[in-house]
Image (cartoon, rainbow over all chains, first blue to last red; front, side, top):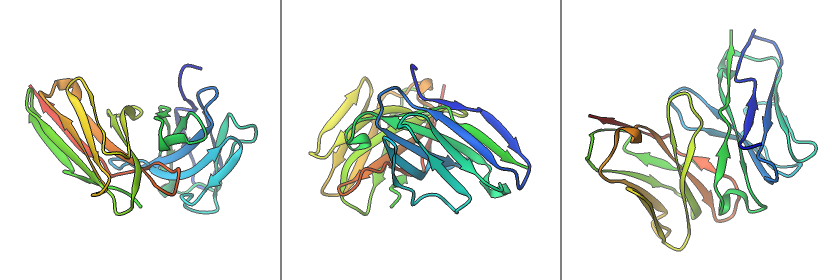
Length: 117
Length: 110
């Protein structure tokens, strides 16, 4: 596709419900990132993939958060037993090449706005 | 480690200049600058690699001082379209992770 695509754009979940957020990166982009952005804050790093390998998941806030990219393209961020503090915009970004954002720009999707009620 | 941005907010009149600063406590390999408008995705402005280069795009330019682990974004003769939140993202020498600062909210008024 022309850009990074995320779905759904908006998701309302009841507390305790599981959710799955999808990211379609730009074709051929090796690096993929997930960020969480609370209202009025900068994007907070969650996890990073290089192809199918999850190289860093240090930003995942709890073991309720899980991300995968099984074939090195589409990625899914899953949140189990959602809680109100999970409400945020979840942004996905992709970057070309193995060096990723060290030397090349990252392209962001429009994000999924998750509201937990 | 998250970079620190200053100021947190700026209000300008159209045509005025602004400088946004970004500093890190760890050695940097590269610095990215993005602009995000409300409800939209962050949009890439420029990337600076270590080597102290300065880049420019029309009236927006940036510098990177790797010794001081700092970068500055310069907005000259600001336009209404420059309004938004500016984020710096940093990649440290040892890693490949892009970490963002808390943002600088810029409002340009007519």
